[in-house]
Length: 636
Image (tube, rainbow, N blue to C red; front, side, top):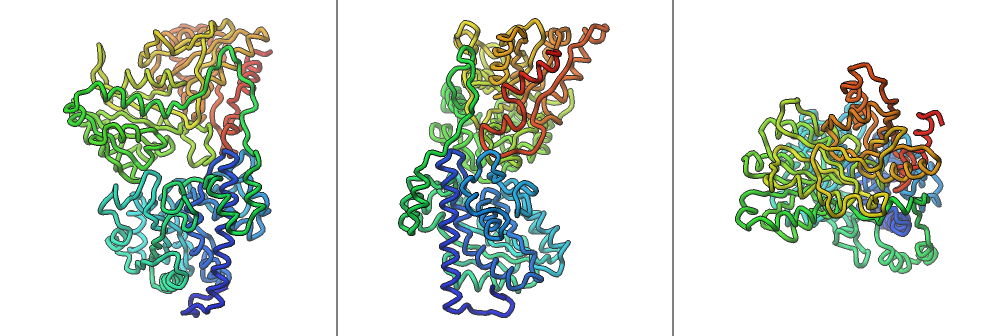
């Protein structure tokens, strides 16, 4: 315990004790986050590892002066959740040995902190750069206490923080920021790709008077700065300069530290630190996989749609002249090009690629501005969860008649160990305009072959016998999905297939009714259909790759069938199924008084359970759950 209000200088004994605590906590973080790497569930080591020195210091402050602080390590970089789990274990909320199940399904240790899920977790931080505004409110609710917020150079790029900084200064809130400035984000170094951005200048420009820059690995410097920020009047910030993952050989100073440290680096680190048993544990086989055996007659090999989208854009760009490409296309990234596969565009055509920071709204708006000319288009990508942030900008793009091609990967919930805050379930928000508004299409393919065809048909502004305009959203999953097979064993989306926007597609015919699906839910539904047919239940399957367009002919077919079940990975409140019942009621069949198909809906409906493949089971759109729902609807 250290009282920062009375202790101006640390003693040698205190420095030794603090260093011991730092080393111990860092070793533990490397071990259990690397358990995520070994088990295949992934995770994030570097951010939590980096910020241990300031966490140890503020933990000492909290213990010495509990009445003067809100004793919570609020962190707006949710991927640094290892800090929260470590402190929860140290405070006795969870057993320390349980940390090795980090991010596993059902462990209640998801990739971001979620209030109410994990014992000892006192807040949900959600997405990067979305906590400071909340911290301001906490400070207003506790005017006589100091409120800490851990941040980073990446989180400070977000526009939310500009608004939060102005409010904190205007109200002189007792908010203290400690910011890890390691000059590393997922795709590189901000000092190189975002020149002009500087945390100290940014905060100073908003009026934060106390902004102290220190070597985050120097305990004496760090203590003096943290103490000065605590005793300062109003908002204050400490900017900690350090390399990413300092001291981890092969990882330090690289973006590899952002993810869970690979076991090839974790094992020698732990051995060098005197933890041979921890190193041995990482060698154990702890990986899991989806236990369901999918029908080999319907389900082919697995591959990642999000990867093929980027490559397909590259292929289409290759058909343009260099002059047209440079003049008519601008691609902008929000630090996620590696995940959305737009880094393939950067590698092939760097002259049209803008590597930008964690600024989704501004980057999308720039793409839309470029695409206001009728013969130009902006190209943008990020995760589907972040689409919610862009809704206002999407409206403005539509009003400005902008042409934008968008790839939102990590749609749905499959393979989403980061859990609820990273679920991409509100994708239909993108279609937020009026019926006579500028064109907006939402596409969600089901496998890599269809994804390629979707891009080839919807990306070019002009093609052979077609034009594209407006906003074109392509959604893909984080997970790999399998090739769908016809009843004769050939690929559904192989040779001879052409994607037609707005048209629903029959995957299997059925006499008893139909399942309507898309994305990763489609192959699970196909497996269910095949299994049901073996039991004598003849249910068909429809793929709806264009989510927001009514295929009138298909709706008549479905309305007059015995059953219509929508199975989707999107949210139950806002997804396809939330509209589909109304569409059925609007069919001629229904309007003329015909017997209407029994309607059902399976979708993402509750907060995540953690893990990867486990998420589909948790939401109930796995094959067996779909089969059970069909039997219930048909009274079987």
